[in-house]
Every structure is written in structure tokens, then in C-alpha cells.
Length: 110
Length: 112
Image 1 (cartoon, chains in turn green, yellow):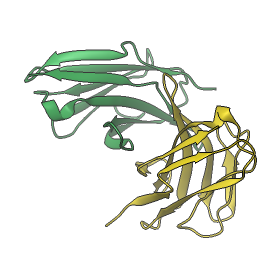
Image 2 (image 1 turned 90 degrees about the vertical axis):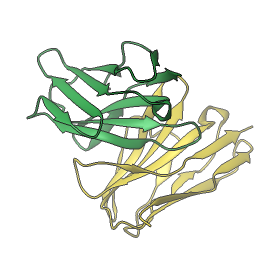
Image 3 (image 1 turned 120 degrees about the horizontal axis):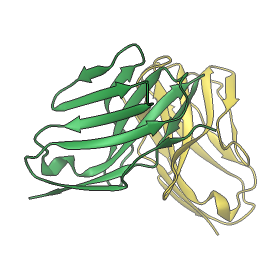
């Protein structure tokens, strides 16, 4: 099966700082990547996605970087807010299937 | 409101008693999928459906069945539940592939 992993299971940041959540993927043939946010008791919520023909994509306060050479994905959150506290998952798409990482818990300290 | 709904949200049952978890989406999405979420393992895909009457196995299909008779509905069937199927289940849909998936609120299943 696929292996989508995260370097850190928990990340604590100060409110207002930038957050960076990392993800490693194993299949170089994967062509679509997504970041999800999951708050306690809720289903995953789409944050941002990127296709394999891109290196960077920006949204509102979020940026996803894709490094295909080392099969690495990162999510950057600018000016982290208390409402950003959640578990963040990366996912990769390959041949009609999605593979998710185990998640990183982001704690935002006031 | 565009959404994915699941029922029931919580279910406690006993080993061997057949159950069905329903999933419905109102976005005319073609792709639907079921996942289970377990601590430390993230979400793992159980089954997916590309369209009506087209279903295929994900990573962990053992012990589960699905059907897609209508575009909007994608029920998950456990013919003979076992305790190792105790988990949090999510249904998701997307317009096409590859595309953003929209997730339901989850169904917490406990099999005693």
C-alpha cells in the first residue's frame, strides 16, 4: 500500500506565528495532493490542493509546497490563529484511490 | 445546502448483527468513498465508487460491502460485524477525479 507519513505528530505554535506542517509521500506516480483540516468531532475539511505539475499553490493564509524530487509536501499557515487548532492530514491520489497520512495535531498557544 | 449526510451518527451493536450505514450526497457527485479512521492510522479507504453500479476495493475492504444503485447514495454494509470493525467511519464524495472530496460528519461504530 501507499505510505504517506508526517515528520511530527504534534506541533505547538504561538498565536500570530507561522506554522509549517510536513508530509512525506512514497509514490512518485501520485499526481494530486490535498491538505485537510479536522476539528474534534467533525469530518475532514478541505484546505488546499496541488497537482503534480505545480510546485507551489497559495490560498487564503495557506500555502502548499510540493517537492517531487524528495517526495515531500508541506502546508504553511500564516499568522496562525486559535481557530487553526486542529489535526491536519495530507493525502495523495493515485489510480482512483486516496491515501492519507496519520495526521499532525496543531496546538496554537495564545 | 451542499452536503454529505451519514446515518446513524452513533451505533453500538453486537458481533454478527448485520448493519448498514447510509451515505447520501446532494451535489450530483460521481465519485463516492468510504473511509475508516483509527487512532494513529489516519484515514484508510474501504471502498469507492466511480459512478452508479461501479464500485471497487480500497485498502481495507475485508468485512465490508457497498452498493451504488443511485448516484446520490452509497451505503456501507457490515454483514457480520466484529469488534475489530469498531471505528469512526466517514463517507466522502467528489465531482470527479482527481478532485476535492467532501466528507460527511462521521459515524462512530462500536461492535461489542
